Length: 365
Image (cartoon, rainbow, N blue to C red; front, side):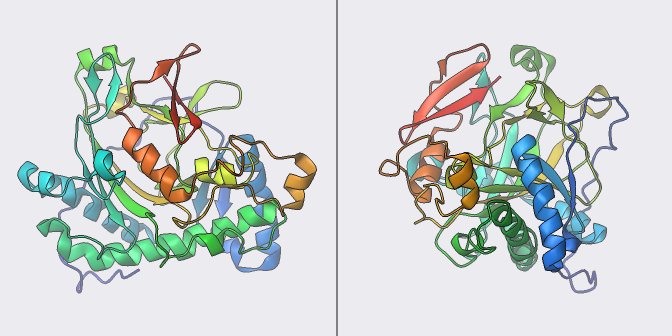
């Protein structure tokens, strides 16, 4: 990615909250040094680490991914543009057709999702397909599209593909098994998301038990989350406790989603996570996030990769038969339309369910 400030359009700097000083119960996330993925020996060692992380907790952190701290800062400055420099009127022009078309491309405006007890969300996001030319963007963002395009390529080729190779090695499959169904130029909806959470008042915090986004699984294959300092992300640990994800400067947090769980026959689990009110010393700050949400190519059928010797030994856990399996396009459109809009059925304490494409989807609160 380019880092020459002389050639780049100027931009206001987004000032994030200082990291919390509170003593939080952090999840113990393995740290993967991606610079070691360049050799077969390095990949073998990293693959063992990633395998255990995906089996044990479903999240891990990544360092040495090829972006410098100044380049990281620049992306977060760009990420604030669609929120801080676009009027509400113009935002509505670029609103995503989530309900109508099952697509997140464009804005998800505030107070669209129902959280609990009549309280709507206070999160806004702007989603940009990895092909930034697919649709028009707000005026203020247009000068930065070349940088965003470069960033998507970096995320795809220098972060996602190496991780997909490690996941394939963990299943004793050819290294490019997952890479081959995550083409950069294929038809699909892998996208960058800029996301901003705004503080809520005490009444809404109490009504939602301080939950900003219910416990859920992501519906793609891999989520690439660029670490930021406001502590709010919590992971449901194997022992049933919610633990915080710790911020590491210029690191990435990686987790698997539903599509990876389906393709791996339940071996790599989609991990349950949520967003809650930050600790006391970070309240009152906005929380700006940068993500790369990854979907396999639209035409991929979400059936287990039975060639895996690991799955042949361990067995396959099915959520549906091969005949009933949705394509990636069907799955992502169904999940996008339903999220935060459907009437959920309460089951066990704190668990709510809905059925999408014949599959039971759970939400945790």
